[in-house]
Length: 310
Image (cartoon, rainbow, N blue to C red; front, top):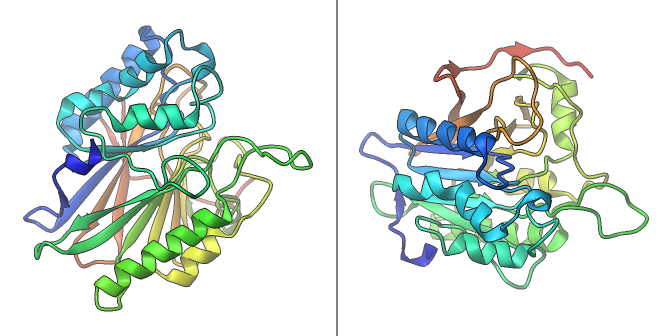
């Protein structure tokens, strides 16, 4: 369906707004799921985004009675809104009842979906979307990467990592877009589910905005995506989910590493740490972006600076 969608474009004021929902953990449409849906409907109405992005764990597959219906339910608020949307998968989406390939295919068939796929490399749901400027040419790039689920190597425990072929694919796409742009890299953002190891580094450095209420649950392997982004010089910020009670963002060597705000009620949280969504606003021609949180009670959280801590 994504091939038939209208182009993403900066508006007449030169702005483009992205709304990030993450970790919905939708199961069977019960009361917590309905609270999640209500949150998404309110935030979409309040922020009026140009694009909605789901950064993984849309469903909690081990508890879903019907995987297809659960996935449809998870994205239904976006599909009904008329706002185009895109998604990447998390580690809980395909633990039971369906493969990542099957879930990706289903996501791509839903109304409003721009979710893509690049065959021949690791993962399901690696793709790039561009945002057109006033002249109708690409003015910004949005990269979506499948961070997988769990390590496939028996000697390494824990979560998966973005693979070398995915990183090479990103670099090729980045260079191609730069060539089309007269040799200058497009301002870009990246979205994936599992945070990079550098998320821990940037918190330890200090000066982050927001909170860290649990450890950074990244892979035990650093596969080099952050280094590749530095070398290409186009990525301004990355946006992950996975850790439900972390919402911090911090700048490391010129790249802002950010968490979304967990949006789902059918999963763990923390008292006094309300569900919500992250808002990201790009400006045409600028290599910067604004970001804030919209919480379930309707308030906006611009986030305060916190010192480093464990």
